[in-house]
Image 1 (cartoon, rainbow, N blue to C red):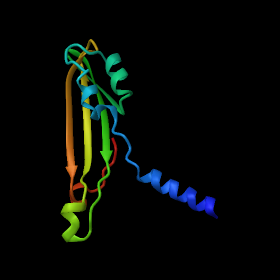
Image 2 (tube, rainbow, N blue to C red; image 1 turned 90 degrees about the horizontal axis):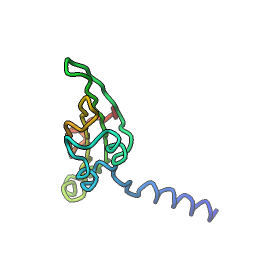
Image 3 (tube, rainbow, N blue to C red; image 1 turned 45 degrees about the vertical axis):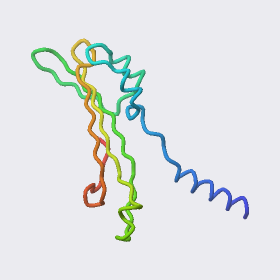
Length: 127
């Protein structure tokens, strides 16, 4: 019985632990990506595999966009008098890296959105 209780407490503690953010959320990694210089191979080494890859073609050739996404859960205090002090907003971040026809970084864009109330966020679904 005691072993079962300890195991249950460890599972709860592990599920409450903060998960480290993905590599694209760290400034030192993003500083290593240089527009007009870094290649797709270098970006993959720095950030890992993208979660989504889109390819588009036009007269200039094929363009590739890699996307990375991060969703940090927030907390929402139901007691109105404690809501401002205890609530923690959710964070939804999307990074896109666009490569030119030579597979060199052409554009990097990151959008962060804080979600403070359940009404703001609705249900977020990954790509």
